[in-house]
Amino acid sequence: MLRPVLEWGVAVDSKRLGRGLFRQTAFWFLLPAILALVFVLIYPISYGISMSFTNRFFTYANYGYVGLQNFVTILHDPLFIKALANSLKFAVYVIVFDTLVGFGLALLLNSAGNHNPIFRVIFFIPWILPSVVVAFAFRWLYNDTYGLINYLMLKWQLLETAVNPLARQELVWGGIILPEVWFSYAFVMLVFAAALKSINPNIYEAARIDGANRWQMFTNITLPALKSTFIMVTILQLVWEIASFDIIWLMTKGGPGNATLTLSLYIYKLAFEFKKTGYACAVATSMFLMLVVLIVCSFMLVRYGDRYDEKT
Amino acid sequence: MCAVLCWSDTVIDMMKKHDKSLDTKLASTSRHDKHRSSYMHHSLKMLLLIGLAFIVWLPLLVVIFTSFKTRAEIATAVPTLLPQTFTFDNYARLFRLMRFEVYLWNSLLVASLTAAISLLVSSLAAYALVWLRFKGKRIFQGFTLFVYLFPQILLVVPLFLMCYRLGLLDTKFALVLTYLAFILPFGIWMLKNYFESISRTLVDAALVDGCTYWQCLWRVVLPVCLPGLATVLTYSFILGWNEYMFASILISSNPSRTVAIGVQTLIGNHGTDFTLLTAAAVVMIIPTLIFFMFIQRWFIEGLTLGGSQD
Image (cartoon, each protein chain N blue to C red):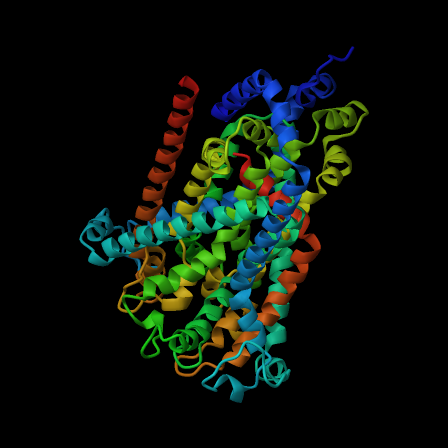
């Protein structure tokens, strides 16, 4: 006789197939994924870590292990410190603007009713564009002789002479943050729109009947309900934006004068311009360690916060 | 979540207490007034949305319209959004001067291979994660989530050295392999969430009726999860089509370039022909846009399902 609740299809099959085969079936289903992950992720990561203890020059095979030499150099490398600071700066700016724009648009979309799907697609489009196109579109807009932005600024007399923001130390950050935000806000918007949709509308109805105004409903219902979404999106973005590469590289190549050199760009330049693959791997390994610490800490904070919430 | 639930309970309690005053309140607001103000409100919101949509689309519109301008026109001091004289010359030059059709073909090959392989491998793995029992399942799950967060830049140097040693540099195979590294964790995670959302009884019924696991996956689970499959397929295709960083490192010779690299070579150190560049950009965007438009409803739903379940 069958048990009433078939948990995970196990009750039936433990009779028919026996335990040994179970593992085998799972193994065959997982084998391609395991092979692929080992070959393209685990092996390269460990290879990269082992390379970070060498003084390898580009692809040459005659290199030697130098112990912790590379990591000592990193500690005294002013460019590394600068790149680290730039990465954090970039990530923080992008996350703040992404969250503002994405959350704002999600709220607007959520209240737009039946036009919502059309606008959702319209606002989502930048996310699926190639980074190459995004970067060059903005470079064209920024162009100091023919670009639209300079033309409008001059016309409205906001500027005296035309400038290319990517060539000026004080403007370059705005110049790379704008395209990155344009490129990445859609993900934030989408996640928040889904989270907003999942709030039970009866709660708002109940609050409205009790005489709560819009602002009270927003601060007392919407924001608390989205707390976990906020945290998750911020963690994801922090990791992605710290390691962001394409837009910055295609727009400034780290310039002018290393002003926008981030960790990712530093690794790329070390490996493929200065050909110091060993040192580049060491920088990547340090970045990896920092990110692991960051991820673990933030997940622990989330756990702790959840437990705190349950207590109160 | 807990806080919200508690809050909603108290709200409902309060609602019950206020039951009587509720009726009077509802009666006092006249229906006509409410309707008119909400109509005003609605059209204002629409205007705001349309305005924002225009601002967001402005860079894209500028690119599209610039690609139809003549070279003489973009060199004038007064840029307009719409072209004065409409020309397809830039597109013709793109295929005449550059080998753009070769780049397009390469990208198509790489992107569709990546999409097909990642779909197959990740649906098998996700199926095992959801419906089969094996040792180390939690470890495997945790690992996929962890590498899903893993930044690509950290893989650049080791993968380059690996491909060099295996003699894979400058081949499309190397690109497909590297793209799998960051699409597979996403695909497995996404499909796992999707498979979990379909009812257990369906799968159990199939197994009771004598399906093997393979038949169960093929005949029962996959047809039900078409939106999830569409999401993984679209995402991996778009990623393979758009990817720049790995393509710029692993590909060196002209005939094996992908579109992203083809577009990048158009930017010169001294003078850049922006009409040619924008035409190339438009050609590059079109396939993703078409692909996305067909599949967008599923794609956005699938993505939010994957993203919002933590």
